[in-house]
Length: 135
Length: 95
Image 1 (cartoon, one colour):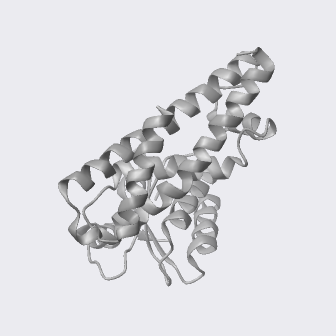
Image 2 (cartoon, rainbow over the protein chains, first blue to last red; image 1 turned 135 degrees about the vertical axis):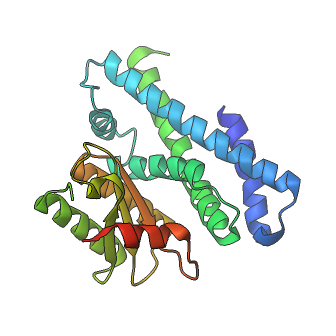
């Protein structure tokens, strides 16, 4: 999943460099769509994995905010607010996706900026699991 | 309107913090109907200075956290006149 998202990220970064949002080809639109889906899935799965780790460590998981606070304490995420921004971005890009070129560029610029953050959080969570559970 | 004074103040503070003190705010949707129960908090904002996407998303998240309710935040985009803007202002309550 990570490799596919990394590939989509490279494709979208190339589109962003062109800056031709008014005249995207069908292939470019497909690359954007793939990136949007992969970004969303990766964020969702990472969130679920965080929750699983919190359950394993007998933390309160009734509210996802408690899971995030625990992840912040473990230094898996930099801040609860940062994670919430990424989550809001995922929700917004799926609900507010539109053809307006300026809006589209704004969404994808922020997603390309936040994708390395997701990768970093993934690595930290993986390191935590390796260290604590030997997996 | 089904919001308390404290909830309205929490909304105002967060919107002004992210979109400037001159931002104008309307509550619309089910929360203006006293006969209904529950529901999202639908907000429409006309900012003095358009916020970036990240500021808009942070603002929405901050309001949802403060109210512990689902929030739908629509921010007027410069140079656009969408029907939802008129609906929100016409049917809504200025906060």
